[in-house]
Length: 252
Image (cartoon, rainbow, N blue to C red; front, top):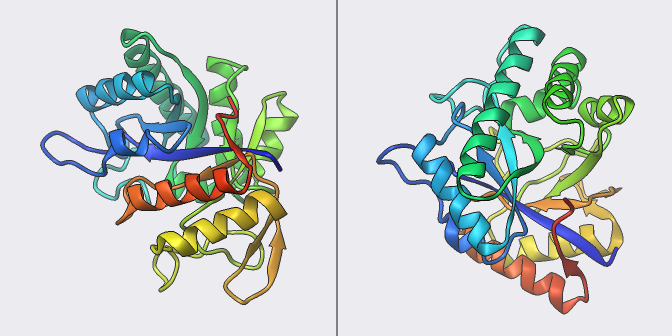
């Protein structure tokens, strides 16, 4: 692979509480997953994030999630599919309006946290997300885990399904992410993360927690913006990719 997109979860501050350094992340990433107010973010934070992303030439995506501010959207919610679809439509629409106010636009959708993990296997919720995106704009790609239900259903619905990998997360042998509740699930050493990403981008592979090597195909790689040392990791990842001759550019 000679080209890869780097994405990051941003716009996750809320009111007087600041989370992450989005502007610094925009120096390394090419796509911004902007929180839409359900798991994090508020209208002012969202609009400012859109403004900063546009100024940095970073593509904007809707980071939609469960309506769960208290849990940062990382808990599974047993929500009816029609209600989930409406929530996703609502979030995309809110971001579209705030992005338009800053002279930019939403170019893809990436589910967040608990919803992201659920729709790897939860067919009903995955279909709800796909239906929601298609009802708003059938040209919007969906980011998801390779082999997930949501990407399978997106392709079946005629949407662009974009597989992604994670720079700072450990993998199970089946290709799922190690639960955040387990030790070692989140990687925090910039050199280790950069090596992790290089293997993904150049060999289409990742070393899993049991030491085995899993083949994966990813068009985009996520560096979480809320992780400790996120800026240093993103900088190291971009530098390593560039040095290896890999072009870092948005997929959308």
